Every structure is written in C-alpha cells, then in structure tokens.
Amino acid sequence: MAVGLAVLGLGIVALAARRRGVGPSVRRAAAFLRAQGGDLIRLPGRLRRLAADPRTPRRARWLLVALALYLANPIDLVPDFIPVLGQVDDVAVAALLLGLAWRAVPATVWAEHFPPRPRTDASAP
Image (tube, rainbow, N blue to C red; front, side, top):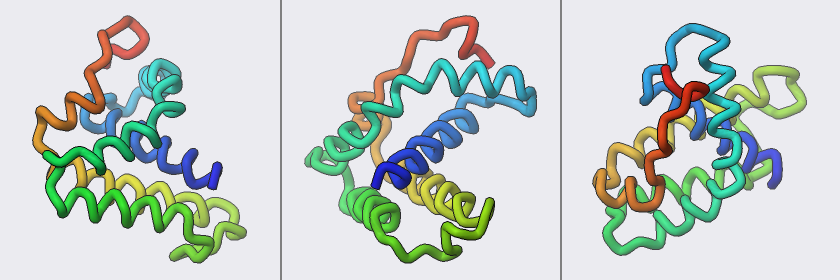
C-alpha cells in the first residue's frame, strides 16, 4: 500500500510538472520535485476529499476509485519484480488516470482541493 501511494505521488508530481511546463532541464525538474515533496504526504486525503465532493462528476469519481483499486491490487500489468518496468507501468497508469480525472473535474473544484502554491525560485520553470 505504501508503495502504491508513493507511485501515486510520483504520478501527481509528473502530471503537475508537465502541466506547469517544467522542461527537459534536469536541474529545474529536481528543484520542482523538491518543492512539491511536502504535498505528497497530503495527496491521498486530498484525492479522497475530491472524490467525496458532490460537485465532482461521476466519471472523475470512477477514475479516482479505479486508480485507488489499481494501486492497491497486487496484480499489475507488469509484475513489480521486473526491475524497472514493474514500477514504470504503475507510474504510467497513475498519470493516465489522474490526467483523465483532472480533465473531468471543474477547475474551481480542483483548485479548492489542490490550491496553487506560491511560486518560489526553486519551483519556477
């Protein structure tokens, strides 16, 4: 379960990095990940509250439930004992489901549960 939450957190960070336009610079990407690291702890609760919000569309709720079930399920598309690919498929599925849920949720509802962080030098793209 802890590994699933970590993968979910990495998927959210990857989605947020892509959305904010963190480019190919490894140094900027690392600074962005350090700046976002504290939010990973609060991520499961925020996603649960987002799914419980009555303004969240049914499609987005189903996507969030599917994400939680996939990460909690011990059966994966690619088994986790395969060195790199076992974890990459979890990140890919998490990023895909989160991206689809993000598009389905109205922007005001998403911003209420995931308020924008103030920009700092470390997180500026």
